[in-house]
Length: 126
Length: 371
Image 1 (cartoon, rainbow over the protein chains, first blue to last red):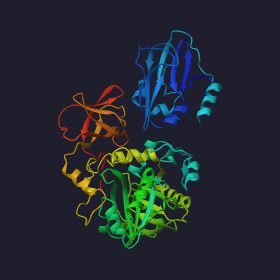
Image 2: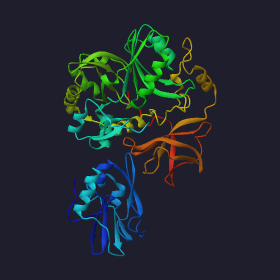
Image 3: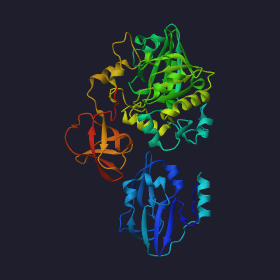
Image 4: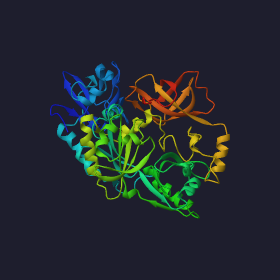
């Protein structure tokens, strides 16, 4: 299972990349593999204020609906319209073209998992 | 369906599924392949080329004896004594109150020999009901589910893939027919039936047959034609597109065949009494309180089992099966709505977790193959 070393994670199977105070957020390869073909994604809208741990959107596969949780506090400043239009790219390239949304941080995030910690989470669930 | 209390049973093809990298899930107490890779790709392969399914979880119940035909006429809604040897019927078994206990395919293998195929989750119920109802008939009921493996080959290339592997002349096997033949040298009941809306075959592997060898022979023969293994996820979206009811969704013990729009399976013209006759005769006369309709979502958000259907904002029914349709590229669903509802007028929506999604009401099925 691909768990890139340069990212942080949540136990809800999201990944977070922070650059210059902006967090890019997506779902992990572990999550996309478990979901199956992703057919619909509803990320939070640009301008929304999100708080870490809150549900802020949905990802749907053929068989199920999953909530997207905000991993950080801040304001949504960008949404990946390509993923909204073609949700299959989330499964094809979860850490690249399949990113979901960006949040301008209002404070430094707490409680994010290291790649090692996240790998332990997936081993527990796998 | 009851929660499994022990580890799920595995089919004779379990090692094959693991080798092929299947995602395995507990389904009706069986460890079954959900998908091997992309369920959408598997679905499209069955529509455009061919797919191979392990259906060994299905129940096989043999009914034999001089009064096998008369017994099944009494025990089931269908007119099984009218079925010619070598042919099959879609039928149902109901309770005395007319509620559907299961939907079945029944093959007539000989004058005094039938094979009843039940859904995995209902097999024990069907075996118990048949065993109780056989009292007084010169016939025997035997649950042979553990002895049979079942492989389905479905899709437009099915004939070309199977022909070189079987002693059967496939042009002679009609839809809903099944005969003893061989596939890859193994004795099978070869039936032209299926649950996908495509042409295809269901291959019942007799006791002693080597299911992995037959599976591998089919997969190898099918490779040039684009055959892929397909899981339960594709099976469900295929049957939904084809408008075929699923027990537990469109069919239940609380519904009669008439409620489900399947009243044609009840054969009142049969001689003698049959279980449920009085209740079903009443149900046939009564105005239907609900009807099964098709819905196509105008947006992209998938429709799901259990969501409420509204007309002009007023609840009129609920979805029994919903999924994104790979063939239509849109969300589709089957739903029960009030029997007297005017579906020709008004704006219909579905409550998708608090959002009103616009839908169009359509006739079932969503997909019908060109013949």
